Image 1: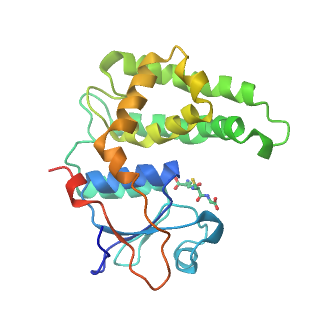
Image 2: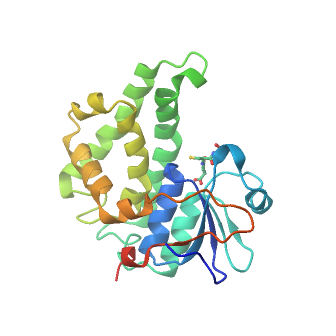
Length: 226
Ligand SMILES: N[C@@H](CCC(=O)N[C@@H](CS)C(=O)NCC(=O)O)C(=O)O
């Protein structure tokens, strides 16, 4: 990929972060040209911290200096500008309903995911308990996916793209276990998501950004929906 020459929104990102994944998915779907700066979490660039004191990825710095420092805000900003795949308007469903499901993923499910995946980082965390609790959310997704193949209808929406990166993280914590669960629709949905061209494209590897150097042009032109 070529280096960025024009002044574009700057996206501070970390390839493996599920929050950054969902932001990249929306920026790509909306065709929002950015300068992507891949960061290393243990050595965050001063420029990123200057823009966003809380210093979590993703951070999007717009040309007018506005800073978006929540992944969902980045998704909504990008898709409000241009939403060619209609992620914000699933047939027969509302944005509010999608936001409600995403919130439950970000709050309750993520809390159990962290205590399952990183149980040693939490005092007295029982990974088995937290996996069972997380499965309540999976059960709900299973019911939804059994109906029409995606969380809110027959095609991917904001909810699928906002939630799938976290289910991927959950699945990869113990893949042999996950692969033998009865969540067949969730497993198929996740497989389709991870094998999809848009996901493959946002997961391309980039070297860590070096201060003073241009970042990388994102998204790849051939990954932008027409
Ligand atoms: N609510 C934030 C959460 C972002 C977040 O926690 N990102 C993690 C990486 S996955 C992070 O940057 N953590 C800070 C660190 O590890 O220093 C969002 O939706 O953007």
